[in-house]
Image 1 (cartoon, rainbow, N blue to C red):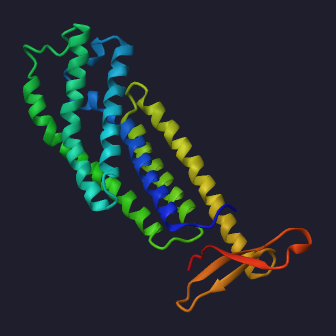
Image 2 (image 1 turned 90 degrees about the vertical axis):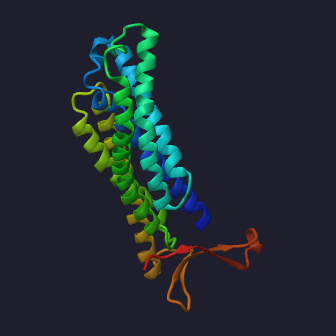
Image 3 (image 1 turned 180 degrees about the vertical axis):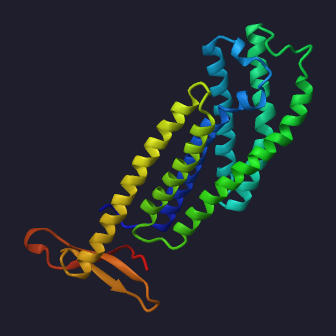
Length: 263
């Protein structure tokens, strides 16, 4: 097992984990936007490669806004509020991306002189904010669960956080895969994300079991080089024992706290 557990280091890793997990799901969900908010725009009149590139450009825009929103503050409630605001910005921005692609290609698929683009832009912000609120609710489930996981840092906090994030990713990426069944590449990407998250969840579960088995072995004195130390407040610590010096000079024993045990 690696270095002794450091609370600040674990907090930074879990913060990065929540950010990257949410952004990955937002990337795939954002690619649905062109079909969801522009059903009458005739997107399928475009060449397939241009239509797909446009959809994923919108997805990247959504992912960037999601990355910013959940990483602006560590406070989950504040970050969830920013998600709703980012949703309101994302939809008009997505329409702008599609309109820009339409102008560049000169196809006039959106029929700018006839199609009510301004009306759609006007409605897209509150609709996007509503979708952003749904995303904020989903993020709050992830954020507060991760927060509880590392509220008291123990030897299993990091793998448990990875298990929570991977399970959340599997649930919501599966939902995106179901919704995006007929969308270009979205379903395949969502299924790929589900598979990767499932593998991460499995690896995290194995690591949790391995660390807890180590504690049981130490308690039975079946693991050399480790001891358990108890404090007055009832918390227990896993302690690693090493010898200082080298060769015949390995006289003293150095005891280093590796991490707090789960209650």
